[in-house]
Image 1 (cartoon, helix red, strand yellow):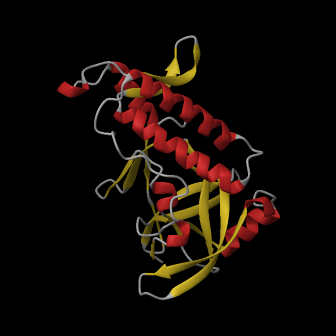
Image 2 (cartoon, helix red, strand yellow; image 1 turned 60 degrees about the horizontal axis):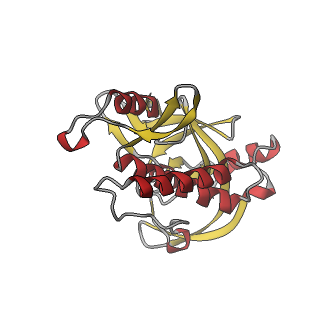
Length: 239
């Protein structure tokens, strides 16, 4: 069920678009790194309320994209925890450093689709315990999970009242409206990569799970390989 983006579910934080095509001065990059650390701490703090946690994670991922566009790389630093450092190399000449290439490889993952019911689906682990098979749908404003999956997670205690975000109205592709319950998914794990605090809608029982824009827009990039029946996606600064 493809959905057009609803005004009621606009991005929770401003997406800072200006200046992403040029290298940021060191001072500005330092401010972005500090803002990234603040957002990352809120994003990963289990005590952060659901809506604030989602906003903090989206904001952190926006800062990650800005830093990456400014030739900064996120990854392990010798003798210290992972962090942001200059990639080096000569990006103006199209020559990334060895560190930039290594960090990009660490952040990129490829997962194969599986065939189910005549369509290709992508298996994922939700909230650490439940398995769902998603259709990648860039036209859906949010991740969507069927009612029975939400009830399963409620029974095993991984989806609680603290994750509830109320009811929202969506506009469908044919122009009709639909009221759905909105929840915070604490994690979506695909292969070896995990995204925390993702907004999702709960659809009727026996409907398809959709991997929509509340997941896809937070990636640095993603693409579908129809020859290998796989998806390649890249997280930046969220190991």
